[in-house]
Length: 73
Image (spheres, rainbow, N blue to C red):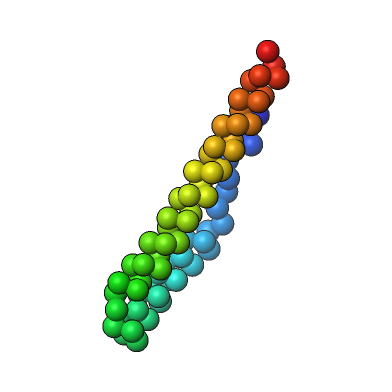
């Protein structure tokens, strides 16, 4: 596996889209519900789910690497 296979290109529209979602949801949380805790809970929950999925992905990649090393010996 080469380094080129490991590079993931993120489209340019992703970062402004996520920033826009954060801003719109923050404005909604502050202006409509007047509860900043709701905003923190929702985005904190999404962030923790994302981190958990990323850790599972890393464990998956580790298992694949160990299996590849075992097959080559």
